[in-house]
Length: 342
Ligand code: UD1
Image (cartoon, rainbow, N blue to C red; front, side, top):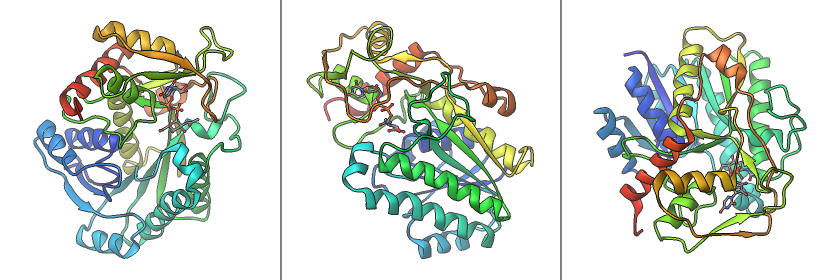
């Protein structure tokens, strides 16, 4: 066994894919999740892929006493990957305090408890949302942080600062901050994937649900942006590729390879894809027509953003490998397997 890793939010979308990769690399995994936006059945899917059932505690990271009990019962946790967070941008505008409490208090609890239980590193899930609309594309890790457009985005910025300040003050652990671009797709086995609660807010689950007939039509938010086809551009990254970067990050911290006690990496492909290009690729790869129409812009959307992944490529030795075609095929396979008709 390579080590024991606590994965908060481990039954969620990116969390579950990361648990699979950790187990397949030889790590022992403990999941904690409050199941507020996921389902305990995900653990069965993980077990079917890896043959190993991860330990699971239904626990909220805001429950400090519960966390303490968990650390006491599970001695020797080497590192934490902290996914657990609320992530709906629109909801965060309506319920800011819920987002500030959920996303910030949970991190503070973990950082306070880590030294007491000898945990040596934490990987934090951040987002390219911290860059806002970058002035220069592709965007590097050194680009300025722009004022957040939502309480959700603000919690990512604040949490990055909290980790910086804590480590600067001499905390006895390391951290790696991973800024995700747009994760999409599902595990190739279709045993796990993205399971949005209610009406999906993100593009790809909305596409797959529309193709499956669960939604009547996909709304494309704007075709009058300053982009070649007028629709917004994003950097869509395969979720398994993304998950693999977390395993590398954990190994890097545990084997003291980090160049400093806190490091930040962009996780993207380096390629910008427009909403209309993504729709066309989905239709072509999966042979299903999509019912879509162009509507007004969505408030708060950024026109275009894609990563410069060079730093992660060179320093982490990680690269996004899956093609957009295979990734969109995996998303459709998962849709058909898991949720058709729901
Ligand atoms: C959003 C957040 C980001 C967050 C991520 C995780 C913003 C500005 N960014 O990313 O911080 O980390 O969600 O959930 O809110 N689109 C449509 N029709 C749809 C849905 C989306 O046209 O029904 C378009 C959007 O306008 C956008 C693209 O698809 O251009 C991607 O949207 P989405 O999947 O929601 O992700 P982001 O907005 O990039």
